[in-house]
Every structure is written in C-alpha cells, then in structure tokens.
Length: 235
Image (cartoon, rainbow, N blue to C red):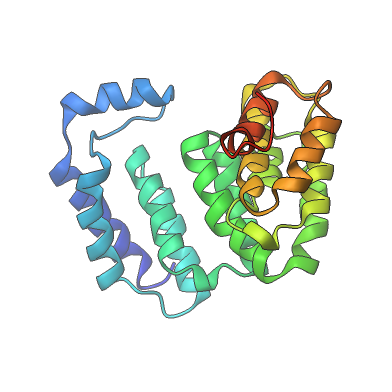
C-alpha cells in the first residue's frame, strides 16, 4: 500500500467518527435496506470531510489513486464507501481503461443502488466516453452478466453522455433486458431512455412506441416522461 493510502484512511475514519450521530445511524441504515452499518454522518456533514480529503491527499499517480480508493472502501461503515467513491470521482482523470477492474469490484461488492449508480454514471461512464471502441465490447459482456448490478451498469453507464450516447448499444441493451422482472433493471431501462430523450427525442420515442408491448409499465413510463412533458408523446 502506498504512503498515501494509510494516512488517508486514518484521516477519513477519524473525521467520520468525530461526526458520528447514533440517532441518525439506524434510520439511515433502515432507509437503505442494508445490513452494512452506518455511523449516522449525513451528506452535509460529509462535504467538509470530502474537501479536506481532496486538499490533503491528492494522489501522485493512478496506482496511488486506486490504493486510496480501496483503502477507504475497506472502512466498515457505509459512509466510508461513499467517500471512497467521492475520492475516485475527485481525480477522475485516472478513470482510464486500466481502472475498469477497480470499478467492477466496487459495483459487485457495493451491490446496491446508492453505491452502484454513482460508479456507473461517473466512473464507468467516463471510461466509456473516453475509450468507446475499447469499452463497448466490455459492456457487451456486462449486459449478459449474471450480476444484476453489472447489467444495470451497462444500461446506465451512458447517463451523462447526452448526444454522444452510443444509441445502437443503448437500444440493443434495453431490448436484451426488457423481459426482466427485477425492479432495478426495469427502472434502469426507463432512466436511461429518459435521459437520452433529452438529446434524441425522436429515436427514443420510436423505440418506446415500437416496443411498448414488450417494455414493462415502469420502463415505459420512465422512458416517456420527458417526451410526454414536451408534448411529443401521449401518456
């Protein structure tokens, strides 16, 4: 482990402990429906930790960045996982193809929307946007992965890509998974279509109408929301 990772971990663990609020911990854990314990440090109280963490622990290179991310990820409370992702996002220039195994680990181990979606949209999404020819075939494998959260990432990994979205892949992935009954997959399909609808309302409308009978009601409603609001589709 690098000379940065251990001090970073100690700093974050201490800062979280200082701000711990047991009265908030139980409700936060219950809201997230997780067995992982919380310290009760809400988002506003984590912001000051994030700022100091970024100021004091800038990584010298990608390896040091990855070791810092994993050091925070290893903390036992969920707030540590949140700060690991924030640290990764703070230096996202290091989010290159060689970092995809790290992100895959965070997704498989995180295995819940509050951790997975941030990694998918901001970290996997960055790799995808900067190395499309390399990332596409990897996502073609992810869309058929047995792990729900890996499949979900393949669907929502382009949320921030706007007009640069690989529409052929997005629509192909939606078709491949629209038979699934799992809520988080149905929601992902609708969310991805809705976001792309801001940039490409015509193709999204055509996809929704063509596959209306095959899409779940949730996927269709979510995907059509923007188009309905803009008067481009009937409810």
